[in-house]
Image (cartoon, rainbow, N blue to C red; front, side, top):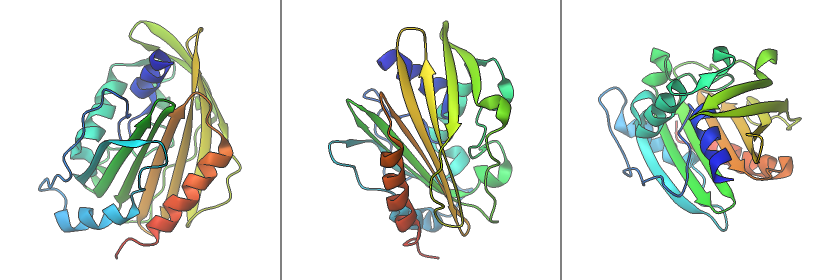
Length: 224
């Protein structure tokens, strides 16, 4: 399963990196000049505590979204992956290549356990923007990761609306021998956008919805 998850991390996660047993802990805070440290610090209130049976494997890391170590690692990994459909890289996710997103205050944290990982990012954007829905052509495609071909199939989940806008997806990734699943949740509340990725062998929609409830509640606690 580790090989499958490694492939998933490389080709799907451009939002906040991918946690694993090998991920080193990030500094508690980073304060690059492109984001107010005070603004980023406020976003800590939106980060989830470690779920039962999991440990913090990364973060919390604070600062300008595009300059965070986790974001840079995710973007670098995507550049190393050969996608059948290049337009699907980062589809339906926050685009750190856009200047307004890259400069936005952000907070990132990741949790890990033997069964998988959870990565959460919260970004405050200057306007109430929200990533476009996943394009139809990106619901099924393949990628070459380190010489291995991995296929991805994604379905939209009927998650009850959270915040002002929300979406949830469940992707199955397979390399011909093993497979893994990635649950993806996006929530907008005002100018705050929360992105969460849950990676594991068997990710249940009900579990994703519970995490979405908690994340949405935390968004409501972030100081203005």
